[in-house]
Amino acid sequence: MRKFILDFKKRKLTLLFFIAIASLCHAQIQKYHYDKEMIFLSDAANESGISVRFNSKDKTVPVYSIGFNSKKESIRNTINFYYSYRKNIYRMDGILYNEKYAAANGFRTFRAASPVRYFKKASDSLYNYKSYKNLEKRIAKDKHGTEIELFVAQLNDNIEYSEPAVFYLSEHYGISPGLGKGELVVFANYKFNSGSNAGDFVEIKDISTDLYLNKNQIEALIEDRYREFMQQSHQAKTPVYCSVTAFSKNTDDKTIEELNDFIGHMCDYYDLWSNQEKFENFNSYFDTEYKRRVDIYSRNGNLNDKQIKIYSEEISRLKNQNLKENLDYK
Image (cartoon, rainbow, N blue to C red; front, side, top):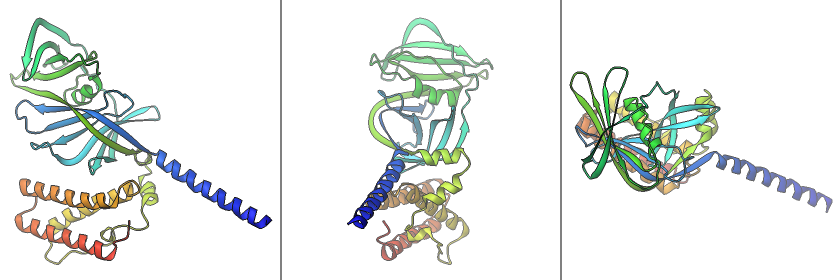
């Protein structure tokens, strides 16, 4: 009886240990919700631009940006965001997997390079721009004598647009305008000494999307212990193509380079996020990411038609091989 009680206590302690470890791992995964998107579009060619996403009610949610093409589709799956760690603020570069799982792959300490902050009201006149009415014009000059014009709308919605606006404007134009609640920079125009000018206008819309960040992954990168982190994150069972992969003999070096880049992308995604992601979503993303890349190759000519055909055949072969040999890896 005494032995039974001791074994029971031992099993209970073991169970509590694993529950504690699981809870700790879960705590390192941060889920953030976004309800607003600020879209910066070039006035010269409003086909592509930068989307800045934020939460209008919760300022603890980190702002992040992602580039898109004329179809409002992500062209590289790369994102930028700020991360606060040990009294420093870092500007992180990262990869966005399946539209919601982010992994940092580069960073630098954020230091504002004396941005232009002080804008004065140009006149009592009000302006219209696209669908926006009654805009106030504010002006300033930078240290090079370039005149900066901001056209500001008052949306009267009590939302603070300053942080997402500065996220883009400070990075691209070196300006950090102070904005009151409800104030939105609709159009920013740079008038250079040469007589040329460049501008961006803004669209704002409601969204509902989530972003997941792994604190351990980000902090391991900052602390220069990323190799150790990835070794610990490596899953016991992985897709078969994450081991040594051989391609057909008619695959040239450029196509192999692109194939390896795709495989590395998918294997990192699996190692980092397989504990959160469903198996069917992983397979769906495999197909979506493959099609996205082929579309890019077709448009930019990075691979020719023959190379794209071989690339597609190899991707199909790897997927079928994985389903056949390693169906239950998840």
